[in-house]
Image (tube, rainbow over all chains, first blue to last red; front, side, top):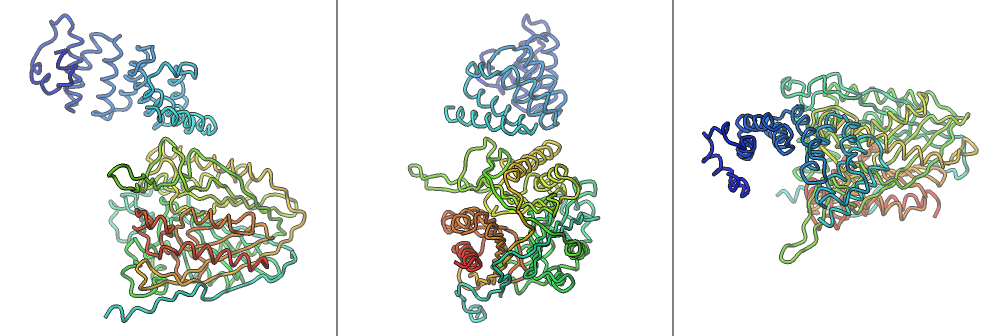
Amino acid sequence: MRELSKNDRWMGLIEEFENEDFSAWPEAAEAFHMRGVGYLHLKDAPKAERDLKEAVERDPEEGFFWYNLAETCHALLKDDARALDAYRKAFELEDNFGWMPAAAAVKAVNILLYQVRNDEALDILRRYRDEDMEKLPPYWRFHILRAYARTYAAQGREAEARVKFRQALIVESTV
Amino acid sequence: MRNELIKPIITAAVLCVAFSGCATRPLPLYAGTGKVDITPAQPVISAEGQSFRLPDNTPPEKRTPLGNVHDPLYARVVVLKNKDVSFAIVSADLMLFSSKRVIDEARKRWSIEHVILSATHTHSGMVPRGLCPTAGGWEWRSAEADPGELLNWPALSEDPWYAETEDKIIAAIGEAAGNLFPARLAAGKGTYESIYLGHNRRLIRPAHGVVPRSVITLWDNPTRMPTTPSDPTVGVIRIEDEARKPRAFMVHYACHPISMMGSSMITADFPGAMTDYIERQLGDSCMAMFLQGAAGDINPYETNMRGAYGLNMTRQAGIALAKAALGVSENLPSPEEPKAVVQVKESMLDIADREGNKSSAACVASVVINRDLALVAMPGEIFVQHQLNLSERSLIPNTFLLGIAYCGLGSPFLNYIPTAQAVEEGGYGATQFSFVAADAGDRMVDAAVAAIDELVGE
């Protein structure tokens, strides 16, 4: 199952494990998560939600489970309120500079900006201080800088937004 | 057969000239302002968000709901008058507005010799029925004669909203002309690099290997990549009364107000937010006004936005522009005396179409005040390079080109006026929805420069 998941063979994974009851598996949460991600890729919203909810209930401390539940809520279920909660959870649980919390931050910021909750958006981004930016992979550094810029722009802080947009452009040229 | 019907192309540079304001010594200057709400009671525009006025019998499900009026649309008027010249400029929160009747009535009823009707060009406003060549009313290429002559002006007034808007604007000009005060006029400009507005929406991709040079038009630029040509200039005209209190504050800037385009929302877009902020800052007795520049190829960085996010970003864009304009104003000294030399010249050009088999009359109106400020009105969506060229060639330090502006003569709207280079490159605004000869913009700028030279006696 891990091999199929690692190689993005989602159709094959679903075909093989569609009717599997993972409850008795020693790593049941991970299994539900992998199958949920498979359904997410195949855009089967109810089954993706069912499995990913099961995964986070069994292991609520695993940020990636929350992240993929958030993706399901956002992309498939169009439920931004639940997506935002799940992105926040994923972001909080993975307290590092890896790609997942950065992606969760960018997506949460996006939802918050669309709801004009600009101060909350900025709060999320505070993890990424100027001196820590180099810790991020360039691709995500670009997106975090852009999220900062858009948040400042939405707050009417034009000068600060301009600085961030320019920094993002510089990073983009290296990505 | 068809060719026989088409009149020969007239290539004369300038066909006729209207001129006023011979005095070269400053005369007491008077100004007045008027502002009127032109928001339609029945916003009959497409529910899909297109700004074109639909017929009154359009079924409700196809109309913008009444609740979609986010902020009111206004027409704003400034009248300037001295012993020699009277002149009114109108800025309407609409995608397009031209009206012979308004200009004729202003002349007849209020003795205003020259009127410039300009639109802010908000795409969340409206295009009067029958006025936009691309909206099914009339169309340059299929027209058998000069579209300016073929336009059925009385038919436009069959739309009750349009007729009512005309009446309101005529009254607003009357209000301005009837409440004149001794005026001090100051003009200036500054560089303003907006993070919200003002990128060139034509992305030219150079040839790469076997892939030829190409153009991507209507390009969004969310990362705010620098683009050229663009004109990061904000122009300011401040009119004060005898007590040096600001009574009118005009902001010139070039950018399409299309932040909320297609949202089926009625809004004045960033120009509305800009004027609203300035009026709050300077007080109720000061009327703010947006003067649209040569925005033919200039867009906000984010367009077609939706919902609360879009409305917030639009508001921030307007406020930021307002702050930049107020910053320019801070450095403008108040003139010593409420006097001015005001000169106006209306230059008629005969503009050939792209195929060269018919032509349309176009008026370029140039207003020069105190050899310090020039307003040049052109009836079309002018590409920004023409504004840059005009500013560079003009003898007047503050020369502001007004696009989407009609002075009562010739064609009310010539669609896009690209550069010859853009025509070569192609794309929207250059080879689509642009029908004039490739040199039309250059000729209009030439006419304006010649008019300004003549007015200042060079």
